[in-house]
Length: 257
Image 1: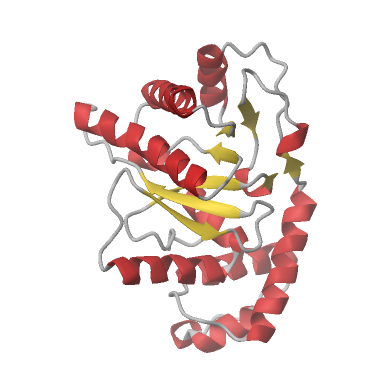
Image 2: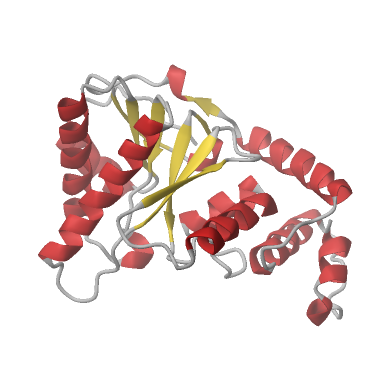
């Protein structure tokens, strides 16, 4: 795979294949991260798909059916969202939708695109091409999940906070949750895992973001009477503590790696 990616990206022709496997993995991910969206041959895709599925299995897959609800239809789970088996996971995307191009960046957008495979970037690029403009903040798009254990990925662009949070920022973040849930409902999706949209790289304060997330989900489920399982996925101590407080979780919710 590395040799094929180097062949199709001649600007990296001077790179030599590392001897150790960990460095090879980082190089492979880096080359996938910087690769522009275009089709690949079937042989490459078959090898890539087998590799990514084995990598995800080695990390350990968590089935949402094994989680314990903290409220009716609502779950809290700490773990790697790329290892969660459910109907759909939510990606905190950028306006281009095609993922993070920074090699091995730790953002969720990079992680999801990496382990889904290069097909996801191409699918997202096609969505943007068809609509003729970058994705607007607060909306949502649906793609297959390709090599991830979930079935679909919901992509939403959260607000980027510069300085103090404005009411417009709050409305747009709430819209991200509503848009994802509405699209899931239209697509007959019955389990959705939300990451902490707009926190981290987009600088939305963690507590306020969580308050908006919980309120938006509860309001949507109450208003629609939709029988949908919603998982709040966290990865950091601070977010787990905030969500446990907001959801009234008593520590019985199972967590992942």
